[in-house]
Image (tube, rainbow, N blue to C red; front, side):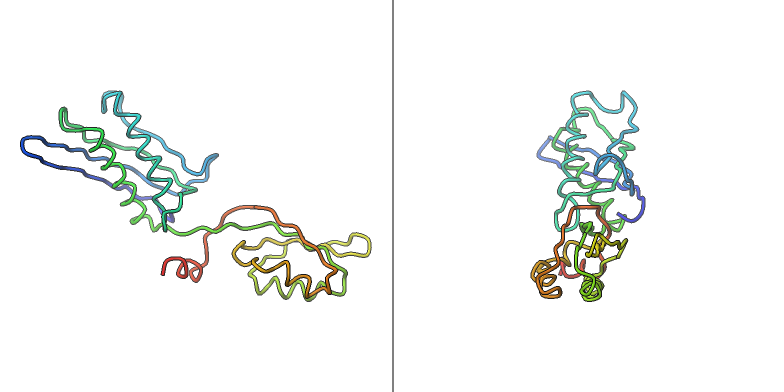
Length: 203
């Protein structure tokens, strides 16, 4: 998500004389931690029965694993549980789970959830006479050139490039270099996908 927000999820159902109720308040914010999603709690020890704390954690974690755009897992997000409106005899595990899930979804909507794409670290090794062609092609793929060096009679080009732009590259780089260039690629990081990529995925 792009901004920090506070959101609530409320579940209330009446069936005859039976009532189920729960309201969960969370803060959802951008955060780069050791894991894709960081989950914290500011609940007081007596705010929720012990047997309901694990279902609450599981509900939030499950929501972050499938709650992003297009159902993708979230990353670079922190969720802090601020409050649970608990009512004795009415706040069941079902009500708690539903309220927590709704709170996360509302937070993603308010926080302007965005799609992220994998970026690769690319190394291309080519004879010098073909480097110009290789660079020009990488520019069309929205690559960022990060380095260039000589290794004997060959030139090594390093770049960061979105994975989505690299399909068909093996054939293309051979064509550009008369079959004399080689390349290697490895995952580097995730970045916000450009608007055109997100639009294609969503519509």
